[in-house]
Image (cartoon, rainbow, N blue to C red; front, side, top):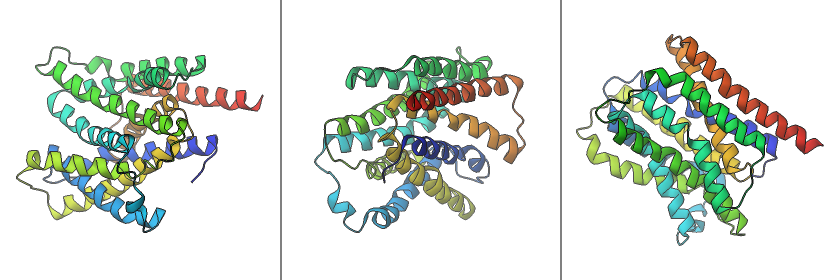
Length: 294
């Protein structure tokens, strides 16, 4: 699947919308909590990809996987960290702390690609990173609980999410830049397998009801398996910092879904911060589109 830049941006927006459904769906769970949610979600992601990948890439997809490539395994580890660290961080510190820490993602990714790939970034992208990060901080800064008992530990665990994402997006582009014909889409499945194995002992005793299992199966398929695989396809076209910037839309979409689907009206600070994020992303993409036409 080869995409043009505009198609990749549109697809990445759809990906973030799919990622954002987790908050609304998990509010409907009856008994499953914390690590059990992560375990079942990761397991259903694994099972979904075991079906999706052969349908998408043919029956020989598993034989063609680059099992000996360090990029492939490192990519899988990155996905497992992203699947797991967010939930672990939420058990240690407040949601606001986690989201503000994750807003560092575009900056971390920009620094990673600058060092690993020598990619210069245009001023518009650096500006968008600063404004979007400021928007997230404005949204949740008043809820920041610096004095909480596990603030530092929770923030460090949460930092694992943008760090792993930065490595992941950089890996996709580094392997392409080195002329390696690696398909890193199946590494999402490896990450799901690692995450489910790691979180199973922490999830016991399992308490999910049949209702919960249906919802978690839906999350595994529609919130992780499909969008994560598609995000790798997008990262082949978009620069890594741009992918990370667009990923911030997950937070904005999540707030919107909570408002429309659960009646949780956002505060004025959240609306203003969300507007900053959206404005920064739209302006960055519009300026990029205009420059490409000149």
